[in-house]
Image 1 (cartoon, rainbow, N blue to C red):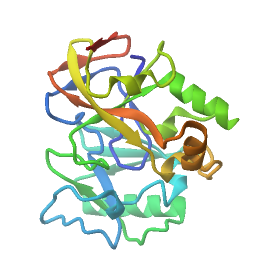
Image 2: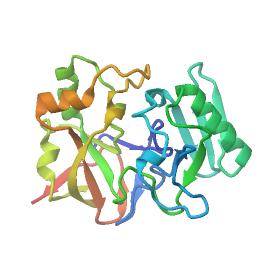
Image 3: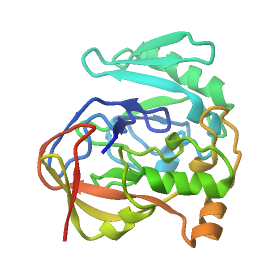
Image 4: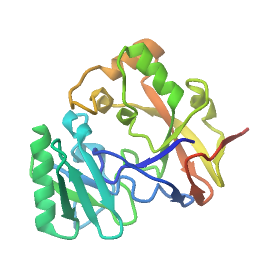
Length: 249
């Protein structure tokens, strides 16, 4: 395994991690911890439970979100956004005024199709990932390079919004792991299903423009709209880049 990423705020940029402590039956800590609920969202702060992705601001409708660099500091609860000029803007998630400013900043980036104002959504102890399945995603660098070559575009891996990346495998090898367990370091995972992609993958993560119809390209070239696989954590432990992957038959 070569890389570990989490996405503290759904729809925004990833954080690269030097390691991750994973707990059986749980998602990756801090991954999709927050999301931006739009004005029409069914998310209720008084009863914070998982709701579907259309209740939140997403890259599929606002592609310029793909360009925003963000960091989340677990220790002090601050979100830092780096704008296109390289300036940093920090926000304390515990302060309503900061969260209002944060929502306004994000709205200004994309000219969002989703109605403002935006509010920061959070489910205590849970996640706001697209699927309420307590999983994380694993991607194969060779599969990414195959899609990049077939599209004649130098694609960024950020398009796929993956948690774990592996290398040294044939393209699409990961699909053969469905229904099997794998180990990364001391942690065991159950590989459950392919990930059917959405229109967010059409957004260029540098320009924020849609430079390919990724769903059509995948379907025409490979006969499916899938990239990456979902994994459930079976045993707890720590993983880090450089850990070997073992497939259990």
